Amino acid sequence: MDKVLITGGTGFVGKWMQRTQPDNVTAYYLSRVNYDDDLERFDGFSDYIVHLAPVLPDRVIDLAKLAGARLLYCSSGIVYVGDNDTEYRKMKLQGEKMCRDWGIDYVIARLFTFFGDGLDDGKAITQFFKSAREGKPLKVHGDGSCVRSYMHGAEMARQMWRILLEGKSKRAYDVGSTQTITMQRLAGRVQNFTGCQIEYIDADVPVPEYYPRGDNGILD
Image (cartoon, rainbow, N blue to C red):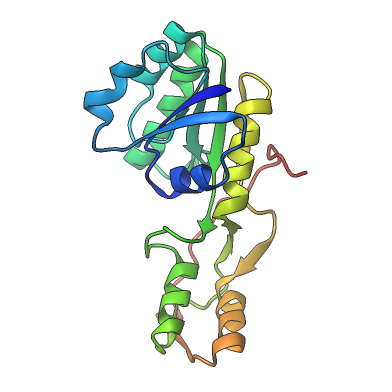
């Protein structure tokens, strides 16, 4: 049995990885709350480490060195956006660099946009479903031409497991849907099923940019 330690394992990604966990794996899902106190208990425990926690991977890199384990670092598609100088993007870029520089067996998953149980209300698709259940209008910000892509959490998790167990060492993989959709079309699909009205807010506001999914994903 392969032993896998997953930090940040009680969030959206971790919960879907738990639901899709392969039979030949025994995994421990470490929550954000006990990350600081419990991490060192796993010195030498793991064959694989998945770092989902929203902190730099220096401590799990040390664990990977001690155990000779492979590390899957969870990054983001935001690394492709050169003009987005947020702290989140800086952290993801620094985390990827640490993996490259510290001489371990690693793979990187750059996550894009998802939907499914356990996701917070920050995503447009989640807001649409919530509004539909409550019989409220589907609120589209801007003119609706903003483009996104969505992958279900189950498919995302299956790709995460495959990258961890079968991915080529020292490679970054994009994880996300290749099918793009505008907010106008997405709202229209939900409207067709539910009959909810669509409400456009600030329709004259410029459409925000989006970052495209690259060509590094495992698709088959």
